[in-house]
Amino acid sequence: MKPAIAILISTCTLALGAAGWLFYQNDQLTEKNSALENTINLLEQEFQDLSDALSESKGNSQETLQALEASRVEQNRLLENHAKEIESIKASTAQEKDEISNLHEALIQELQSEITNREIQLKERNGRISLSMENKILFLSGQSALGERGRTVLDKVSDALNKNTDHVIRVEGHTDNMPLSGKGLYKSNWDLSAARALSVVQQLLQGHDLDPKLIEAVAKGEFHPIGDNNTSLGRAQNRRIEIYLSPALK
Image (cartoon, rainbow, N blue to C red; front, side, top):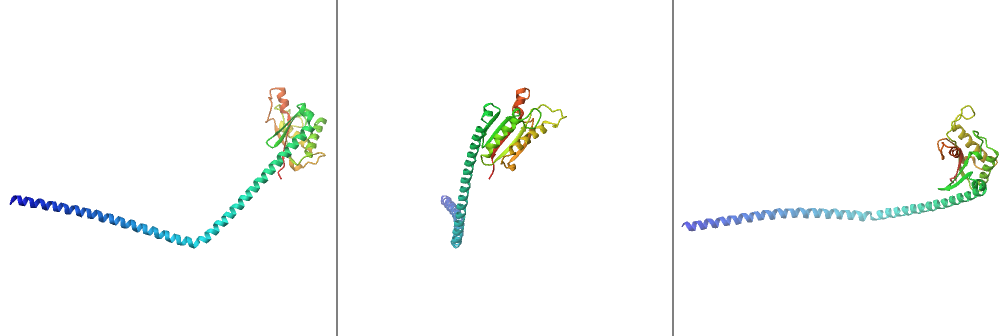
């Protein structure tokens, strides 16, 4: 009897173990099935949302197309206007360059002897012209009144300007760093440089058809030297009038 009982107990134990495994497997399948059902529900909801959105877009498609077309037309208009502005700027720049070149040539012809003698330095750079004149050809020492030679030279400059389109004229007065006594008409180098710049402007305007609104006189005093103020040659270089010419804005 004992062997038979042992076999029966063993058989029952195996049966119970197999049943437990089956229950575990069933629980796993139930969980997986529930997860799949949730996924299916989410997909169905997304599909429904997409369907609703598609239906709505179909209803608004005509309005959307009209808005896109209006935007395209406006963009093309802006691009065309921008292209026209660029072409206008290019044409204006080319014209200004030609005007500066013509004025440069006219000044070379008018001031040939002074340029050759290095009394005047004439440069053309970055769309404008600069003339640098040492005071010795314009003024007496410590004075702002123009001498006869100075008036003659400035008349040549005015003649060249008259033959060309209107230009902005900036006249700068410069001095060396030697202090004035303060007893005369001018108390400082600021005063002297301002008076000299103003004398040049008045001479340029006298008897010439130049627009006063395009001319300015500027006092620079001793603060923009181009030479060494410790030498007589450097101080002579610093005592100067500089004239800058650039095309007037139109």
